[in-house]
Image (cartoon, rainbow, N blue to C red; front, side, top):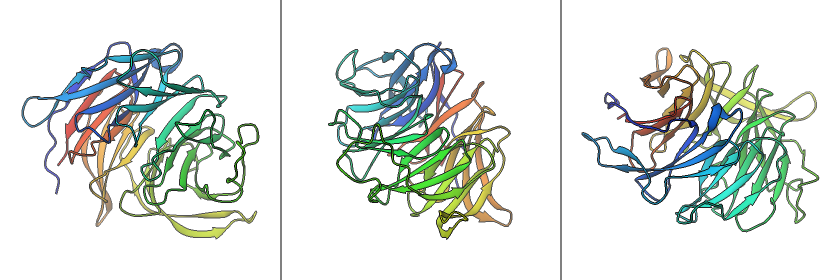
Length: 350
């Protein structure tokens, strides 16, 4: 049973609304926040580097990183992903369709930039197995595979006919990528398939081969995450306010002979508005966190009670939409949340 949560530690960045937060996979005391001016509708973006220092009680305090306060960009930033091969590097996803690679030991400018997506890039994810690759997803309907050493994308998948809100590598199989979209579905792509493989870059000829499709909701699916301990188990969430846990091993053929699969193991109900982010705990297979437009960040258990899964904690310290949340990889139960109130909150749930 988890212990009661600690009071949150807060960092305020006036004028910059937050979209995403991510802990470093190398440093226990470092995290990054992707932000935008004017709620991401128009104007610049900012990448904040944040360090954890001694705080009151057992909870770390927050401070802007001593190496660098921030990087400014020409458009809002929607997501970030730390490199898995270089402790000081990370990539950002921007509203102008660009992706930038930053080194936090260098000032002002990114060390590499890519401009292939034709609309907003809404997510980036770095593979923790094939550590020289990361993936991006965009409102242009495509998902792109990248290497930091290459000037162009390695592969382009025409994943959905509508916005692709998120694309994530499986933590269990290096060539498996899951996506979620405005069309209400999850899709799983094996990028080793012949349709995706090959030496030619598909920037101008995106691949549209079939994938395993999970009809997850009747409306937009805004977020997904792989369970870190159970292969082929994902959580999804979106506009219908429900977090759903899926076992994607159940596969059948649809009317058009496409692969359709997925069994909803468990719905988690409690959010009052759309769920913007869902993330499994890196330390426990039965705990996940969510953030929502209802201004809360919540922690859930999937261990069944007689009525199913249940809520463990509500963090209601935000005063605007909570767009992002992220677990510490080193400190079990340490969770960060960020939102449109320009605040980064951190609290322990044990």
